[in-house]
Amino acid sequence: MDKGKGLARRWAVELADSTGSSTSSSAVVPDPLGFTRSVHEQDDASSSRQKKDAEALWKAQKAWEVAQAPFKNLLMMGFMMWMAGSTVHLFSIGITFSALWQPVSALQNVGKALQGLKSGDFSPKLLFIALNLVGLGLGFYKLNTLGLLPTHVSDWVSSLPPPPEVEFSGGNLPFH
Image (cartoon, rainbow, N blue to C red; front, side, top):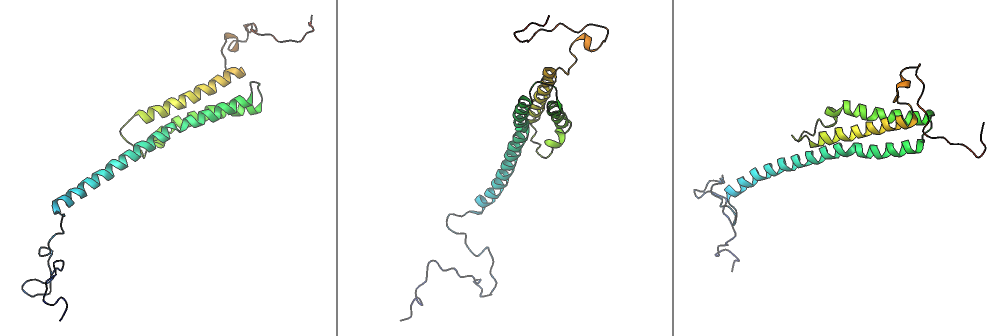
C-alpha cells in the first residue's frame, strides 16, 4: 500500500494552475488563516506613522538633552570659581573670564546647537538660553566679588574719592 497516494492532504497546496501550466499566480494561492490583505496594508501605514512618531519623540528628547547641557556646565564652573577664591590673581581671573566666555559663545551658537533637532517647540531653546544667561550672571557675580566690576562712581571718575570701606579686619595691636 502506497502511503498518502490516495489520500488528499489538507495542508498541501497545489501551485500549478488548474489548466496544467507550470506558472503560478498569487491570486490562486489562498491567504493563510487569520490573514487579510487590508489589515496588512493598514499595518504598513501604522508602522510608518509609528516610525515618524518615534523619530519625533527621539528628536524632542535630544533637544531637551542639549537644552539641559548648560546646567552641568553651571555646576562645574561654580565649583571652579569657588575653588579659585576671592582674591585677584591669574588663576581666578582666568576662571572668571572662562565662565563669561562659555555662555557668550553658547548664546552665539544657539541655532547651531539645536539645528538638527527641530521639534517645533521653543521650550528647549528658551531653557538653553536661560541657563546660559544664568551662567553669564554667575560670571558677573564672580567679577563683582573680585572687585573688578565698576560699581561706584569713583570707578569711572578719578577725581572723586573711593567709597568708605564697609569692613575692616586687623589684629590685636592697633596701628596708630
